[in-house]
Length: 364
Ligand SMILES: [Mn+2]
Image (cartoon, rainbow, N blue to C red; front, side, top):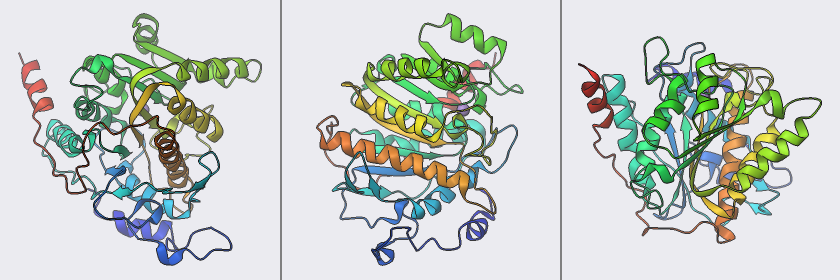
């Protein structure tokens, strides 16, 4: 954990208690530490906001460990009204901001196992887990938790991952580390994920280009095509069309560096030429509107607390809010149905040794 994280947050956002909402005093309803500042009701949980302040392998920037909490603080400034939902959040749903992951573990594999253990109780099928990260290395342990979702039912080949990202994250290793954020998608495929859809990709190696070309589980929409000034519109439309045709359980992983670097300048590796805010919004709406698919979970990762202006964490909070609003809409329209009995708020991390055993089995 970053020792000065909370101290830094005070400098980032001076007035977390006031919303921007005009003509209505909602400041009294604001609950500090809760996403969107929304008060919680009873023991019900429809949407769980889970913070993973994880940072071990980020190569360039620093500060992803403080990102989730900064995003929660910035969410105080996000409007509760979502136009396509047609009402103010929580719109009848119960949002719960869970106590953040404790970042315990003496080694990388112990931390990965602890992430799986922390997340697993929220993948029971009775609620929608929205994870705030933390570097993208959270994806493989998240996939291990998602494996237990009733719709995945221990068979990861059923699961599709939709990844918004500047980077393909398909490296075999980075600086000798197989669990680097730069390998998150590779490791998820190794775990058996059935399909990987990538959007916004514009920074990748020759080896990654070969994986994209050769692995038929991977479908990549390159930013060079979708953002092209001459024929990007066509590429973008076909990208959205493919997303609407997805089927089965889907996890949506949003690395905020997939968005253009100008709106997320503090993220670990900001890259120009990325998705606009509205393209990210359209992606979220398209995935959730797929008639044959169920979005079981989502994460917004590589959030870093920006100093002097909250732009990066505010953009992340806007994206996370859009995911929540779109899930709530799907729920209201009968496109998301609970597959388990309500388990309430008190869910204790489970013990997992998967990643520890992986490394041990690799040692000759
Ligand atoms: Mn990534």
